[in-house]
Length: 354
Image 1: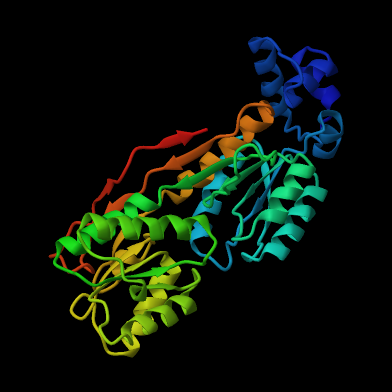
Image 2 (image 1 turned 180 degrees about the vertical axis):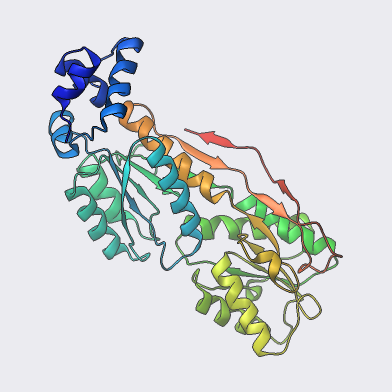
């Protein structure tokens, strides 16, 4: 097996220069750097990651804590994180906090104990212990998909965050249904306490107000961001004395639950109930009818989280930022419109907030 000495001899440089090139510990002239990289490629040299971490205090690994198993939406985000991490020479350690605050705190500690350089976390509805742990141990971290609001001036740590727009796209769905003549529009909202749930409820209310429709709290139910909860919530709406004629579901799992509830009652979409959903997914246009949806930039969210984390590692003291990526409205037929092409248009430009 070739060694660093072999690489140095082949490139005509010192072992120290090879080390600086491989570990990025000192600037090296471009020609010299390329000679080292060519020698590494020719000899098939594989750096000793453990030894390198002892020199640089970096493991070139990222901890990722998202509920990818219990929430399919995060699967695409994970793909974006993985692709971007590999592109930048980082490996991933993945843990599923199951959206449980206690378990979340444990898995974050386990990732930290494995000396990851930083973490990307989709925080739970009660992230107090998570924020306290990351702040106490000064762990570089990016919050993904769900934002954590920290009051100004309380001395609590602040973290970089990346998420999709939530309020405006939801308002767009409500406005679209109102424009089709619906006056009783229900919302199956997500788990209480999540920022995504709050934002989509805000968008729902704004959409009603913009359409001149009153808010009726009997038409807003929580499906806890899961298929089973979405099914229960939709059943509750359908049991109202005057049920809604249209429905917005606030994530893809709850959309599946809503469709089950409608099927079990022999109701059709959009004949008996018009349906729009927040979250597009791979098979949304395979349903009959095809689902009108807001599509989140899932993979882009994952990739942007990696970029924010690497920027944080390079500049630990820079101010924290919150990046909001635009969604896209994908117009199909579950809303009751004639057959559409399914083409998407972006709902808002990207925003970066301090």
